[in-house]
Length: 295
Image (cartoon, rainbow, N blue to C red; front, top):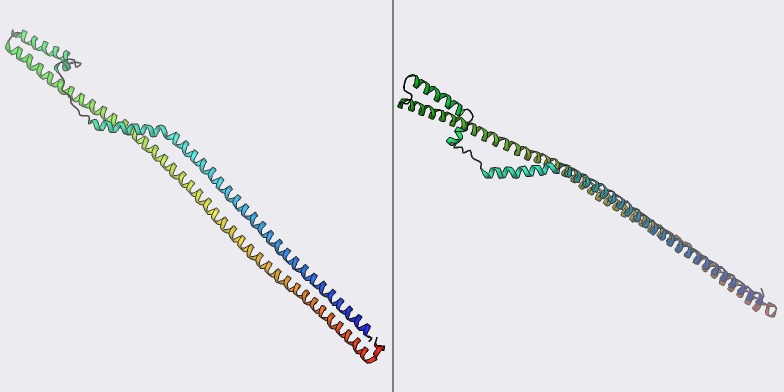
C-alpha cells in the first residue's frame, strides 16, 4: 500500500467513524428526548385523570349533600305541618292545664248556710206550710181551741219541723249541685289536658321519627363522602404509583437504548480510528519498504 493510499484510508476511516458516532449520538439523543416526552405525557395524563376523578368525586358528594339537604328540608316542612295541625289541641291542652292549676289553687270548698228567706222561697215550702197550718187551725177551731196556746205551740212546732226538713233538703241539693259542678269542671279541664297531652305525644313522636330520619340521612351522606373520598385517594395513589413505575421502566429502557447507541457510536468511532491507523501504518510501511515507489 502506498503512503498516499494509507493517508487517504486513515482520513476515510476517521470520517466514517465520526459519521457512525454522530449518527449513534443523534439516535441516543432522540431516544432520550422521546423517553422524556413519553414520561411527560404519562405524567400529564395522570394529572388529568386525577383532576377528572377529583372533580367527579366532588360533584358526586355535592349532589348527595344537596339531595340530603332537600330531603331533610322536606321532612322539616312535614314536621311543621304536623305541628300546625296539632297546634289547636296543644293550645287547648295548655289552657286546660293552666285552668286546672288555677282551679286547684283556689281550693273551692262547699259552704252553704241558707237563710229563712231562702227557705221560704223554696218551691213547695209556702204551699206545704199553708196546708199544714190550715189543718192545725181547722182542727183547733173544731175543738174550740183556735187561739189557744196549744194551737200556737202546734203551729210553731210544725213550722220549725217543716223548716228543718226543707233546710236539710236545700243543703243536700246545694251540696249535690256543688259536687256535680265541681266534677263537671274537673272532667272538662282533665279532658282538655288529656287532649293536649295526646297531641304533644303525637308531636314528640313525629319530631323523634323525623329527627331520626334526618340524622340518618346526614350520617349516610357523611359515610358516602368518606368512602368516596377514600376510594378517590386510593385510586389516585394507585394510579400515581403505576405511573411512576411505568415512567421508571420507560426511563430505564430509554437509558439502556440510548446507552447502546452511544456505545455503538463510540465503537464505530474507535473502529474508524483503528482502521485509519492501520491504513496509515500500512502506507508508512509501504513507503519505508518501497522507497519512493511507496508513494
